[in-house]
Amino acid sequence: MRFPNGWVGGAALVLGPVLLLVGTLLRSPFNFFFPDQLRAVVEHPGLMKAAYTAFLAGNVVMWAAVAFLVQRIGEKRPKWAAWGGMLVTVGLFERTFHAGVDQAAFSATRSLGVEGATELVAQGYSELHLFSFLSFTIMFGWYVLAIGAYRSGVLGPVRAAALAAMGLLPLGVLKGTEALSIVGTVGLCVALVPLGVQAIREQPRPTRRNVLMAVPVAVGLGALAFVSTLG
Image 1 (cartoon, rainbow, N blue to C red):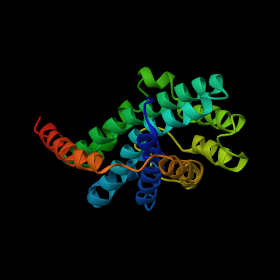
Image 2: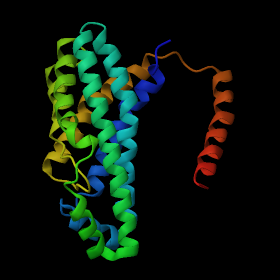
Image 3: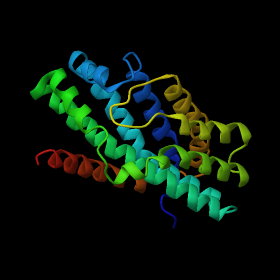
Image 4: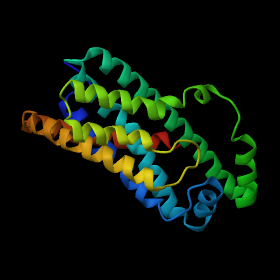
């Protein structure tokens, strides 16, 4: 059995791009740069929390979407699949790292205020770390993956170009939304959501036993999620 399978991969191909687009649109009313993002967190905490949470969730879900897409590409173009999958996955790790810094900065606004948090972020903005040397993967990986998807026949020219548009999405800590952010996430939806729907439709219908087993599993996972918040 391959992992992720069609159910997991198909669901990820749908949910990942949609969550990224939702997060991008929710923070679109506010200026792109980090001082304005921090100010928006104080003035509109619920909206900004939803925006950044949706974007982070989409970014995490995308690992399964990319892995499933790489499986499809690898059937005909294994080298393109390997390089594209590796580069994009590292880029997803980097965006997740950025999200952790974002969360720390949001917390700083509660103790230091907007000005104090802004100064704190500005002081450490150019500090070198592991991902400083891997930032190119966030953008470049999508171009490689899109070429592989096109050359393997998994995506046609239009949807492959839409996938490549994800490489236009700005990167870095506390980055808001600009026009290219919307272009990139809409392109991702155009490229991958239909493929996800197709993958799900190809799966056998779940049996009654499968459905009944899913209920206690879901309850158990929910309980574990709650326990995880207790520290």
